[in-house]
Length: 256
Image 1 (cartoon, rainbow, N blue to C red):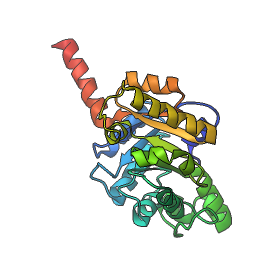
Image 2 (tube, rainbow, N blue to C red):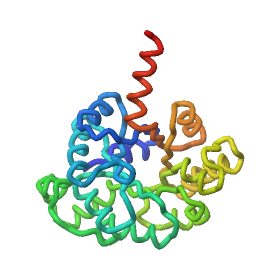
Image 3 (cartoon, one colour):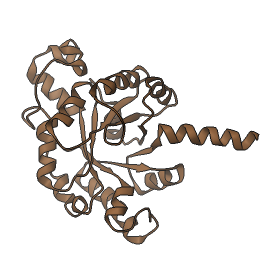
């Protein structure tokens, strides 16, 4: 079990991913063939469940892309079932309080960090993967190390508690949802507003000072470049549906 996104970021390399919304395993394969580092299977806004997520996880791994997922809610079931089908990183939306983050670790990490439920599932090859055949202690150690938990900073409460959240052991970094965060601060989509720009800078700086990873969503290439320039270690560029639509529209504009 190796999380290639975490490995690259620990080495100081930037990573690039996209959200997955179209519901086709073939589309996941195409994103991998295109050179993305990861895909986030969207169980919050997308129409997915653990069974469909499992198919997309397999497609991502086929072409060396790390499978992430955004869960639907902060609950044991939502976290556990995504990890059990092989997701290697979780984005957790609508985080507001430190005790919620502590619950995320409890549900998502094995002992001694958390209390994740133990079972042979598809994510570990039903315990036939090499790392799972060397005893539970080693299996827990590898799983905890390679599974990334990323609370999504998209509320004013999360922003105000950011430094305390980053101190929670077992949290690997922060994922910034700039659209919801700007709305929560009363300035939806106003990314040139000084308050919004400062909030986004502040999150990256806080992550760096805490030694944690910083992820952010970017709707287009211009925003993605700006986020990388701010120091974000990873940018999630749009979603498969918009990437496909924009590509087709560009061809139409060039030829018609």
